[in-house]
Every structure is written in C-alpha cells, then in structure tokens.
Length: 310
Ligand SMILES: [Zn+2]
Image (cartoon, rainbow, N blue to C red; front, side):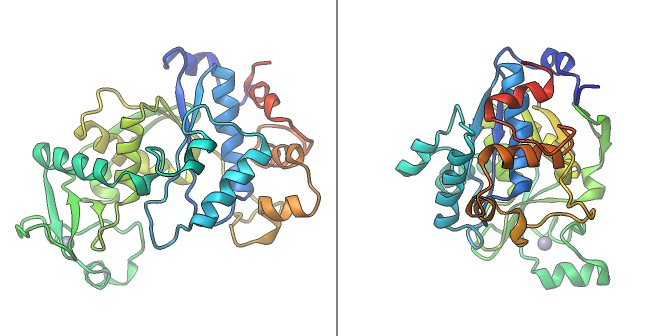
C-alpha cells in the first residue's frame, strides 16, 4: 500500500511543481526536521518537481545566525540539495529566501491587504488577552475582537490584525482527505505583526508561499489546523488558487512521546558526532515517520522510491 496516491496528487499540480523546506533556525536540526525533509524531497523527486529552501527566521528573538549556518551544514551533510534558494546563495548574504531579509515585502503585502480587507491596529498585551479569556489562555486561544472597532492608528507598540469573519474554509489534504475549518472560531482576528514589530508566522509564510510560487506544501500534522486561516489569508492577498496541502505524521520516540529539539538523542549534530552516517539518519527519520517499514539506511537519491517511483 503506497504512502500516498502519487498519480492523484500529480493530477492536481503543474508539471514541475515547487515545494518548500522551510525550517526556523531556532535550534539545531533534529530528526523531526529530517522526517519533514524526507517527505518534502521524496515526494518532490517522485513528482519531478523542485524544492525551495526558505529560512523562516521571522522570530528575531529566537533565531540565531549560528543556528542558520549549522542548519545549512547539516543539510549538506545529509545530501539534501534544494533547487531554489540554494545553500550557496543563503551563505553569501541577503536573500529573498530568508524572512529577515524580506521586511519591505511584508510591509507592501500588509499595505495591499489593508486596502482590500479589514486590517486594524491592536494594543492588547498578553495580559489583556489572558484576562479576556479567563484562565484558559494559551497560544491557540481565539482573539476576542477587543480592538476591532476602536479605530486605533497603527503605531509602535501596537500589533496589526486581520478581521476574520465567520465562514468555512474547505480543502482536500493530499494525505488526509477533505477537511473543513472555521478560522473565526479557531483563532479569531489573525495577528499579522505583533506589538514589537515582528511579522507573525501565519502572515510571513502565506506571503512567502505566494511570492515564491509554491504549488505544494508538505508539512507536519501539527500545522494542519493553520491551513484554513492560511487559505483565507492567501485569497485576501490575491492568490488565485491555493497550494495543495499535504500533512504528514510527526515522529515519536519508541515510547510514544513527541520528540523535542532539547532531547540530545535526536539532534543531527549529536548523531553525526556519535558516528551515525547521513544515510542512517535519513533512514531512521523515514522509519519514524512511517514511510519505510524498518530502520535501515537510505541514500538521498532513494527518497523518491518511498513514494512510489524508482
Ligand atoms: Zn486588541
């Protein structure tokens, strides 16, 4: 039984589709990233497509240049070669494939969005958001709409949000099938830029997928619930047809618990230092994410065959 129906997926895409591998340099590369890379490169090569490498360093507080250069080193060591946004280009300096170099692009996209949709300034602090939602606040707590009709002028110390009206977003996940989501209920008015001037993940990633021409988004199931809001945002930004989404399983330790970057046994650097080969790392990640039946080594040019080609 193949992992996905490749022919059906190919029929939804252009001839040489563009996918992306888009890590955040907030730490060192670990098996969870490698599992995502196995899906991204494997499916893309099986489809005869191209992989774009994008560094999602929109969070200036958590991203570091040394993590970025380690990430590029580890990708090269693993033999995972992007076709667009090459490692050499990213090493050379400013690049349109690095979010921290794209501030002017996000400014222009925000201005365009504000001319077409309800964008408003919001001065809610974290404390305000917690107070408004009682004690149940977490990152997924929907925005209450407090600043929607206050008419605040955009200013330093104020975030920017997109008004999200009730409505259903439908999409057909290439692995999970038809899905329906309601962003107004899930997240409410979407944060585009935070109070400290940092671009929000959801906004930066949708602007990037549009400007880079990404046809297929292959990512972990932890981002499944973000899809509806990203479809809505993409449409309002002027995207004529959305990318195809494919959400894959996250990897688990043999005991069942989720892997984290902090656990030393899953870092590519640690495995490499312990004498594990690149093919063994790729093979282990492919095994842990369910695309090969056992933990055996796998060369980069063997990834396509996991998805039915080769
Ligand atoms: Zn507010």
